[in-house]
Structure formats: C-alpha cells, structure tokens
Image (cartoon, rainbow, N blue to C red; front, side, top):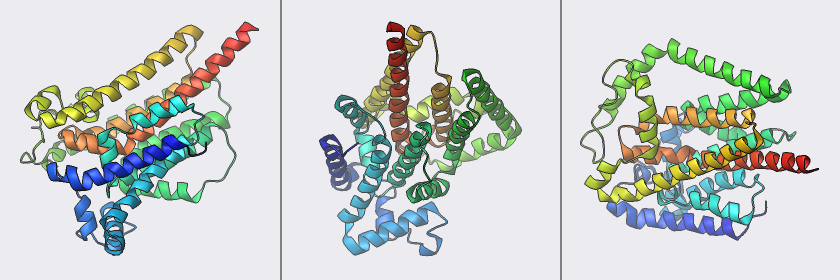
Length: 361
C-alpha cells in the first residue's frame, strides 16, 4: 500500500499531539517520566542494552541534548508512526476502511502517549513490527526475518517481556498449523492444547502469582491522584477469581463514579466506550458471517483469542489499581489489537464472499 493522504494526515495529527502534550497537557497533568528521560535523569549509557528505562533515558537525553526538545520527541513520533505503518501497509484496505482504522488510532489518549518520549511510543513501534511479521506469516509469504523485526523482538524482551505469552502463543499456533497443514479439527485440537497448557501453567505457578498480587499494591501510592484502594486482591487467589472484572476495568480505565469525582477523566471514559463498542461491532459483524455460513473459522478465532486474552491478562495487574496507568499502558498494545482485528475480519469476510460466489454458480 502506497502512503496516501490519510496516512500523511495521521502523521500530522501525531505531531500535533506531540506539541499539545509538551506545551498544554503537561500543564494540566503529569506526562509520566517524559521530561526525566529528556533531562538526563535516567542517563545510564552502560545499561543501554540491558534496561528499558536506561535505553529510553539515554536515547532521550542524547537527542534532546543534540537537537532540542522538539526534535527529540519527533523521533518518537516517527518511531510509533512507522510501527503503525509497518502493519497497516500489509492490509488491503479501501480508503473508507483505512479512514476508520486511523480514526480509532487518533483518539487523544493514544495520540498523546505515543507521540512523546515514552515507553508507549516504543511499544507501538515493536508491536507494529511484530504484527507486520505475523501478517506476512499468515499470508504464507516466504521470506527471511528482517533486521527491523529482530530489533522489535529485542525491544519486546527489554520493555514488555510479559507480552511474550501472547506473541509466542500466536507464533507457535501459526507455525504448527501451517507445518502440519492442519484442517479445522486439527486447529481446534491445537487451541484446546493451548488452553490446557495455559490452565496447567496457572495451576503450577498459582502460589507465585498469588504472592505477587499482594506485593503489587505497594507500588501504587494512595497519595497519587487517581490510585484506587486495593479491594480486588484481598484474599488468597483473588488475582484469579477477580480476573474477569480486573481485566475489564484495567482496559477501560476510569469508572463512571471516578468520572463524576474527576470530570477531566470523562474524555478517557468516552474513548473507552467507543473502543469497546467498536470491538463489539466487529464481533457482531463476524458473528453474522458465522450464522450465514454456518461455519466458524477456528484458525482466526484462535489467533485473536490468544492475542486478546494474554495481552489483557498481563496488562491487568498493572492497570487495575490506577485508571491513569491503565490507559497509558494500554496504548502499548491497543494499536496491535485494532489492526489485527481489521485484518482478521477482512480475511473472514473475503472467505465468506468466495463461498457465496461459489454457491451462486
């Protein structure tokens, strides 16, 4: 797909968000560690390849010191934009479809946190590159792994190792399905095996996960403006029993009552509502295709289920106690899920149209 005016407008909007974040939003609330990354507070060149904070802090300081604050942040604007472009360019979208996709990636929260010197900007980069690799894999393209994809995998290890559960699950599922040329039954069994392994993993490490759940609240200060009191991990194994609600609220962000107390959070609340309705809309349209054909594409269903379960589950402990953290950390994988959903729905719809045309003749 050639870069068109919609992508150019999207890039310009991200640049606008950068200026807005630096000179307006930062006056209203904190931009996290952005200015600390730029002023040298995390300048640790010896740990550049070993620690995510040192990587960002060293890079941000060098860019700011050499080129100034605007260019330093522009680097991260282009980095996150390239991650989006790398995956989106592999989709065969109409202008209308591309418009709606980019619209979903233009909400203020995503725009602000991924257009400044931040771990979220780097997250959008490596998750977009990895998704682009997955799409090529799903299209069965025979090619070597590119250098930029190795870099993305390294950054994933460095910044969000917990996302490996999702990435490895998807990669193994695709590779095994293609290697053995599995049909619907084989792919269903492969998904079942994945579920069994997941349950076994949680059971084996249940004590460790339970212990960690009681430590995590200590990292969230109640003095912080939006930190919630820990009422979700009170008894043993609450981390599992309360996971459905925890996963939902960690993805959504501020609750309705929190919006009443702090009206400024209403923007994020509305964003989350629109995002949630978008996912429901796509799932509804996919369900209609399933009903019309009487078939469910277990391959695509499995890939999306693995992605959304693992990404939301590993996100939940870091987002459930603070709506601000929930929304900010969500931006790391939000673009990945949106583009993946567009791609999978596009493939499901294409197969439906092929089968419909075959039935016609």
